[in-house]
Amino acid sequence: MNAYDFGSILKLLRKNHNLTQEELGARIGLSKAVISKYENGIGYPTFDTLIHIAEHFAVTTDFLLGVEKSKTIDVSSLNETQIETIQRIIAEFNKCNK
Image 1: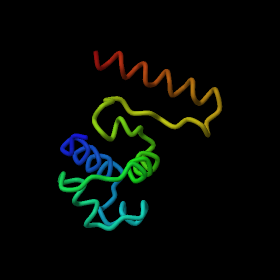
Image 2: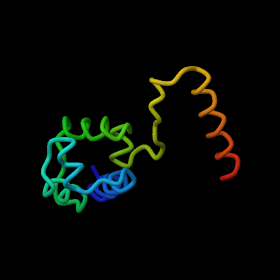
Image 3: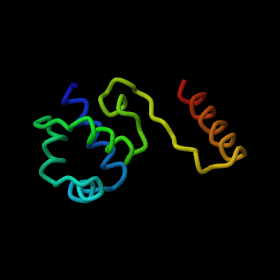
Image 4: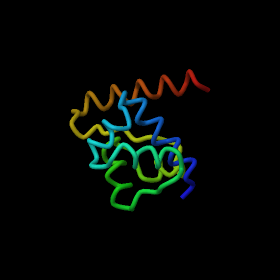
């Protein structure tokens, strides 16, 4: 595990969700100090904690570890029309970014 990738990705996800280290820790059962250690590459999560963090942010563990560069979007609560709309929007963004 590359601690730099994991810590940077965790920090980015946390900030994108407008959470403090303390708030994130409370949500996943860790202290602010542990979140800080992870973000600074000083500590590493257990496999169970890594999975819990991934589930909290709806990303894969590979994404958290910097192995996979794409994110997943949980569409399990959407109907087919809504999913198709999301897919069209993503396709348009991808066209614009090329």
